View (cartoon, rainbow, N blue to C red):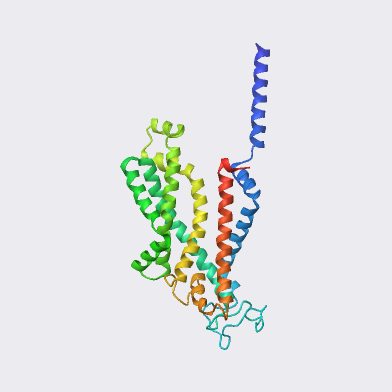
Length: 311
């Protein structure tokens, strides 16, 4: 009897030690996510670009050599330093009224990054709520929401944004609302599809059998398991927000001059595209690099968060 109990205790202790060792060897979810993300060079490049522009945006008042609205007398349309006539006092040259282009690009990073953040917050908060309602409620509620979403998706995005800005009035805040409205249907469809995949799983059925309320099942049980694709869509929505607000600024429907916004800078410089090409090239490059960085990061997050796409 004693020997059998000692054998059982030894077996139990050995089993527990094996479990502990296995638990230590298994990487955490965050470590696994980082290892998968680090294996993607494009995602790392996108992350580096995004972090660089975030730092520039946060430190814009200290990094910019001049005030973005300051006019320098006698320094009209000076070229960058690598061209003939350039001055080291204005590394990237000046615009048509004598404002330092480097300072305006640095402050434009703050505006553009802030615009992308506000667009994502606005569209994600509304889209996640409506998509969760559509996927969980089902029936006529789901059908009504999805038909309205299909109507919004069928309209040309930039045309819808122009209509919204025209109704609300020209301003940067209204441009953010207009672009946010464009991105909302993407979040609705994504969250709805994720909720439909989750709501009939065993943990939801078990929670329902224990008497959980609809609010708890939808918000506490289902929604956290749908956030991985939402995070990826938010990253891609960040780049869409920056690009669309810049497009509205280029059309004269976004930020008002003399605001240092990249799209507005493009619009102001297009009249001098032949005589002072840097006025168009440099803001366009900033938009291109930021959008590319967010797209690369979004693709990497998708691969890292979706188990089916992991290598």
